[in-house]
Image (cartoon, rainbow, N blue to C red; front, top):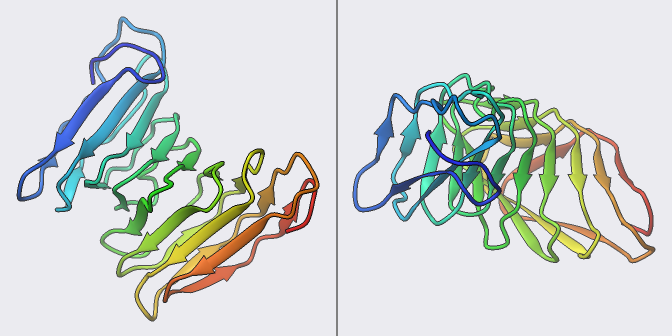
Length: 212
């Protein structure tokens, strides 16, 4: 990863065509630049495109962004401390530390999906939903996903969220972290669930203003 700083700047990897793109040595090697860096995972291939190497900071935090319509799987014991943003496509979690140590932002308004790869996964990262009315967060796949970190639902300009769980029967989506709606007014906020999967919420659900 050898790219300039900035919210839209960074290295882009596009997976297009047929067959999976497997990358075993993705290096964040720009030492001279002390700012945060962005890795964009893009493309149109729904095959199991994969990064197996460890993604780490280097003289600044690394942010990982998934958008477009491709499927990307991270399997390394990653240590980067920037955000992981799912803005489209699908993100596979192939290690309990695959998403580094920073916050995970589920920002898709078009149904970007998250799934466990290779086995059940337990994630400790803090989670933030999209600040968009009727934004959809989708969970799919053959394995359970457990989230232990705190969830924030930033409802400053929106009124509804949809959590869509289509994980297979016998596996679950479990939210252990507290779930907070950060409302700025007294508007009624909705948290809607759909899909065929089983969802377990053990965390405390609360709001700063208004009604859920």
